[in-house]
Image (tube, rainbow, N blue to C red; front, side):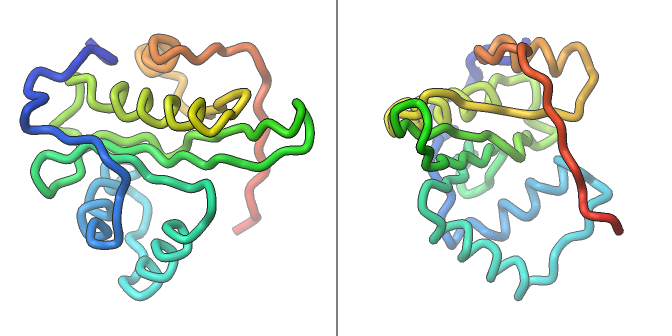
Length: 157
């Protein structure tokens, strides 16, 4: 069942990604959008360094040994409304295809949400392009409400 506790927790650790984790993170991201091109190593290293240095940005991952098997990106964004309380955005939720249905994504999302609350965020947002009822139930089971309308605009190709 999505969101259920994973069975072999002794072998799984949840922690922020570090610079040494770039190769395993890139491999994991292939399970997010398989058609996405893999960035060239030098570009990936630059972008990853920017992510790690960016205040308020953390990529949390579930690791099976040294292998990242599930991850989420958390961005905590400073704010001048809501009494100056920041808000957070969760993006790039992915679990390795061989590790799905074990509760890993739910565990990593809950870690990101707890971190947002620790940073005094007044809300955590997440957008999904999925229309799959199971995915939508999964996010609802993580505590998200589908009570707003989301919009996006993408740069023309």
